[in-house]
Image 1 (tube, rainbow over the protein chains, first blue to last red):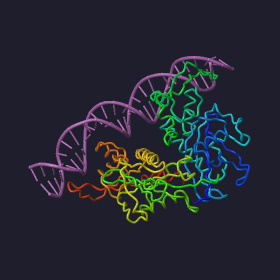
Image 2 (image 1 turned 90 degrees about the vertical axis):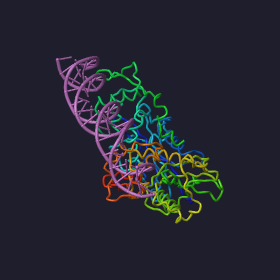
Image 3 (image 1 turned 45 degrees about the vertical axis):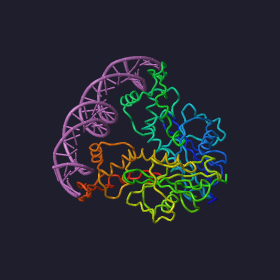
Image 4 (image 1 turned 30 degrees about the vertical axis):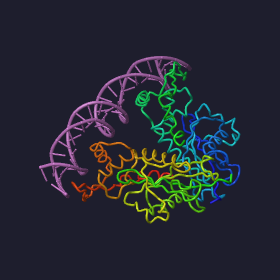
Length: 222
Length: 222
DNA sequence: CCAAAAGTGTTAGGAGTACACCCATGG
DNA sequence: CCATGGGTGTACTCCTAACACTTTTGG
């Protein structure tokens, strides 16, 4: 079966103004001309799937070395009107300090959109984004992906806001802080963030304890 | 990028003699002639990825309608010496009552092998099996995949043996039974299995409570 | 001094874990 | 009657969830 082509598409998440956003591009060519889609492109001859995803990510956001995990592969024969295209979907988490789209090559067409206010998407991309969100919610509870969306130094309120934005529900402040303390993955810094009111203590992510688990999703499949 | 071909490979698990087994085939053509591999083949023009996996499964085992879930896609440029081949891997769970390989077309070459005694495998298949096992172990703890490896009617000892075979450790009988009772997913039947000693009560899987969760892996990606 | 967000403990209920003996049957 | 696997309950620990007030700062 020779007539299959392979693309890699990527759902790029970030937190803006305490709300979860996805990076979308407006398509400049048919099909779905002018509609929104997630970034993606054809797999090249000499690159692995993950390298292709990293390349797409870098082209759109100019960032490298962020959390990246393969999501799922979609291969319905009718999913692309141009012909038989199997896509391997990835998702990435970009910290709010790395959100300068400006340096990206295709940046003019890229746009952060809140997941609660997604427009209709081209192809089966709405389903891909929904599945990525599902995965992200699940992973939040048993891995440390939450930290990937924050800058190196963050306050407890910011960390909690990430969890609330992704899970879509409020969390009790005292229980949240106790659990984080219990996990021993926060490194209290001797710095305080000026918030306009009472300053908040800054924390770092203590990767030591979680080095082996840090990004199971990336690490496991070799 | 036109020179990519897509295969679907499938890790088929079953329990034999209270031990976890995988179905392997001996390759009849190069590359890796004579070596063991997991079943698989090229994606056809008119079928989805899942349909291809179901077809492979049926060809090897003659069963349909078993638990099937997409595992991961592997696309290292060097993974297949014949050229650029991206494979979408699935894994399936086949109940011990459906293990008649005889009816399968390629059955002569198929063989159940205990995961503890795997031979060297062709391509990157050793990594694929290892990853499938990892996934199975994780899913066992928060889904009902364990039931998929048993016949419709089973004893508590048989169910526990499935958990022990996959997790590779002993479980306390009383705690195991209490947890199952708590989950309310077992339907006690008015039948007893003659074991040679004291007869054991048979149970069914109460899908009602778990209809929506039953096979998250299958259901979620549409 | 007031508004706003930071920070801090206790209690009650549920789940997990460790642990040992009696029962029913076939041979 | 004995060997084998089937079947059952209790106590302790730990995690989770519910819940309200004081502190610090800028304006």
